[in-house]
Structures are given as C-alpha cells and as structure tokens.
Image (cartoon, rainbow, N blue to C red; front, side, top):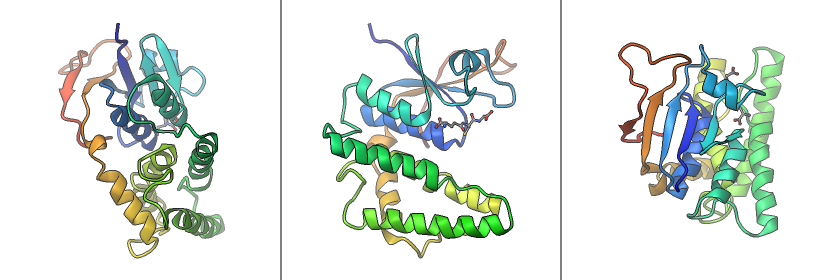
Length: 224
Ligand SMILES: N[C@@H](CCC(=O)N[C@@H](CS)C(=O)NCC(=O)O)C(=O)O
C-alpha cells in the first residue's frame, strides 16, 4: 500500500520550499497542508512538539521535522533521481555546504554596527559560494542536490525579502555572476515545475467558514 505523503507548511517559507523541491525532484505526489501560524493546529503541535515549527513531513504515520533532514529522508524513502550522491565524500561535501548556508547566510540582522559586520561577513561568504560555482553548474555537479536546495531556498527565495525588510544590500544584480547563473538554472529546472500537489487549509478545530478540509487539486505554481 502506498502511504500518503503530507507536508504541513506555510506561505513564503524557505524551509517549506526545501521539502517541496525534494518531493518534486523525486516525483512524489503530496498534500500541502497550509498552517495558520497565528493559531497553530493540533496536527502541527502533535508532530513537532519540540520546535512547534513548519514544516513537518508526514509519511503515513511517520513524521519528519527540520527541512534539511526532510530532504534527506525524501531522498532515501522514495525512488527517483538521487538528491545526494552515493559517494561518501560527495555526501559530506553536500552536507557541509548545506550547513554553511544555514549558519553563514541566514539573512537577518538588527540595525547599527552589527549590521555593517553582518553585511561584510555575508559578502565574504557569498564570495566563497561564488568560487565554488565558478566551475560547475550545481554544487554536486550536473544536477540539483542538497546544498543547492539549502542555498537557493535562502538566496533566491528569501534574500530579497529579508534585504528589503532589513534595508541592507548584500547581493545586487551586478555582483556574483556565477551565483545568479546557478539560481537561474535551479529555478528553470523542469522537475521543479511539475508535481502532483493538493492543498488543504489546516484548522485546529473545524474548517473555517467557506473553507473545505478536503484536499483540493493545485496547479503547483509557484512552489511556496
Ligand atoms: N530549522 C527549521 C526552521 C523552521 C522555521 O523556522 N519555520 C518557521 C517558518 S519559516 C516557523 O515555523 N516559525 C513559527 C514559529 O517560530 O513559531 C527547519 O529547517 O525546518
């Protein structure tokens, strides 16, 4: 029996983007349950009692939390093109760079002196990423892998929002040519554009008026 796959997520999250990309690369149909973050559902609190955050992947009665762990789980649990290499060193490299993005390029800072230091650090870190990508299409080579998912979800999807909110300019269109080319190649990937997704709006108690609790088909554009 095929166990249903559900993703508890929210709009605009770089973390939810990661799980959606992994499912799409593998060609796994899934139901996206949109969580109201101002009124978290019992479903979310039951399956992520530690962090109480989206997203959570439900595969049958099993729950997986934390975006990068979800990507690795999806890679191992489902057939389809590999997201991580079978080579141990290449796997460790992919994990190294995915952690680098999380630790070094999460784009948020308060105003003031700290912000100046942050911008300098971010630019240095972007230069390291630029050097990595100057000779290859994606981090792992020819196809999208773990480090690409971790990086583009932050830089392409989230950075412009955060730069706007924080009022800092870390990456303009004229800088980091390899990074821009990398993000374009990633966003143009055919597998990311096709998926079988349904959506539900999650409600802690009963469906809100005018909303149905049953999944509805979604054309899947864009990935949230
Ligand atoms: N480390 C987590 C971070 C998840 C996360 O921060 N999720 C945010 C949404 S973007 C959230 O659920 N925030 C709600 C809260 O903090 O209460 C992951 O990679 O999945």
